[in-house]
Image (cartoon, rainbow, N blue to C red; front, top):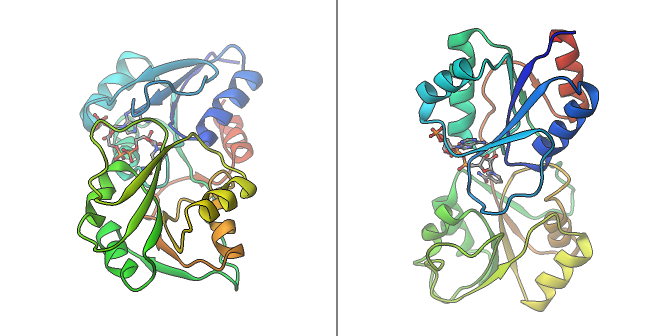
Length: 249
Ligand code: NAP
């Protein structure tokens, strides 16, 4: 079998699991995982790792050509829309096979009290009718949308201390790396007397415990809808990605 060079666009638990599975299945392949570089100490990943943006679609095209990448798996977070779009255009331009590994969405339980919204500003508007002690589980760039909400406490959780403090008058910053268990999420929400959760509809098992905790505590969830995936081949599991690789190996 040929020695292939697979590029995994990563930054997610699924991407790391995929790198491990491919290294096991095809030990002779070169497997490179690409990270944006948002965290300074990412968890270990099997194979090679490169860090930092490529410089748009043009930069990714140059990288694929210079490093003789044969195929790509876009295993970025479902909300990483820019990277995902660049991956599609670069792969299409060069005629390289590309697969989207897109984690399955959460399914709604009848007990869930979800208010589904399009984006962070709409979440802030909806939140005013929902709760005043808020567990805000968004990325740093979305926090500013909540800065003008009056009389609201925010619990903000991040992996690492942000470069600038969250722009929220009344908040507590918790530094922790997931995944979190249901027991941990229940304890966190009870400890801070949370009465509303704001989350992206990221899907996948790894970040679902907060949704389950909100369900069990009867807490409303303002949920930012997922963007649609880029068109093209798609799987929702590492096993599906391995099966796709078998077809092009
Ligand atoms: P994004 O908005 O789609 O990407 C913005 C830019 O960051 C891209 O155009 C690219 O820069 C660079 N970039 C993003 N992902 C990259 C990767 N895997 N390798 C190299 N460069 C990358 O992405 P994002 O939402 O900021 O997410 C950044 C990373 O964090 C992704 O790897 C994603 O999987 C991970 N992540 C995101 C979330 C989230 O909620 N969005 C949550 C957990 C993990 P250039 O144009 O210069 O190439």
